[in-house]
Length: 328
Image 1 (cartoon, helix red, strand yellow):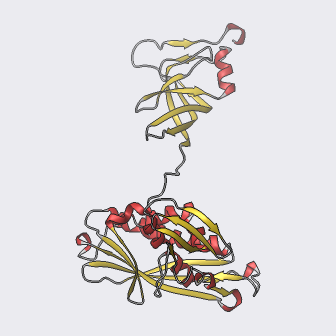
Image 2 (cartoon, rainbow, N blue to C red; image 1 turned 135 degrees about the horizontal axis):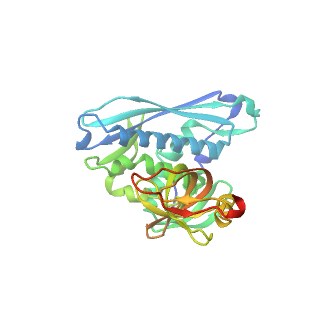
Image 3 (spheres, helix red, strand yellow; image 1 turned 180 degrees about the vertical axis):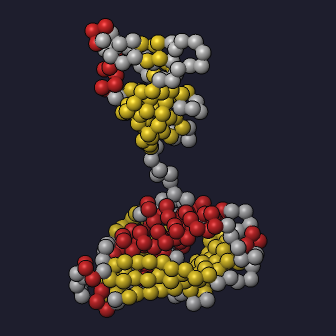
């Protein structure tokens, strides 16, 4: 079976405007959260704010993908509560970047077309939300790619989608931002979210459909953090082989010494250590995440700035190393 939307999705390929004809392009839609948790028209800021930011990033990324840097897009909001729901009105504003020297022959994907591609339009048709709901988290097989449309093989049969819709559906950032924009739907008491235009529902997502919008975990498996800190010497490795144990005030860890000048002073016995000495240094923390979700951390001292000794309360301080006589 061959599914077609607006006679083969060629309608949206016409959804462009000549650049010099639209110094400003706008479109409006609303997003409605519904459910018992928001019957009083309120939602926690920590849930709503990231979702609003992610929705704006979804539109900005799509605009950047389809219009390059020729067009600036912003998403503005104004709230309008309805009985038993939270209704937020959005205004998409596009302006041509004059400095980019856009020619009249250049075509721009308008604000209304971006809205139609991402969340749907008043005239119906397939949007990114509709496509992802149809695919149910499955990746379709591309059967044929044309200049204006792509034919996909899905569980429901073959589907023809506009080339621009196919582009945004395969953009990892857009998918990531859209998933984040829908996160409030996963909260208890929020049952569905609707997008509306001209008082008509153009797309709707039920709580049970949220899995269709999940993306593969593309976060980095290794992260590195550089810290400037103080460490107390616990177990040094004076021969330069192996890691040292330091205490950071909370717990003890093993650290690789990557400061070559410092290590040479230790190996050549030109630097003395006493129990309880503290180093002021830079530490690189490397955190690795396994495929099963396990976390491991490794520590390396990349630069030593200072060494401080503090006499113990009572008794003589234990000398761990002493400078060689040739240096004294």
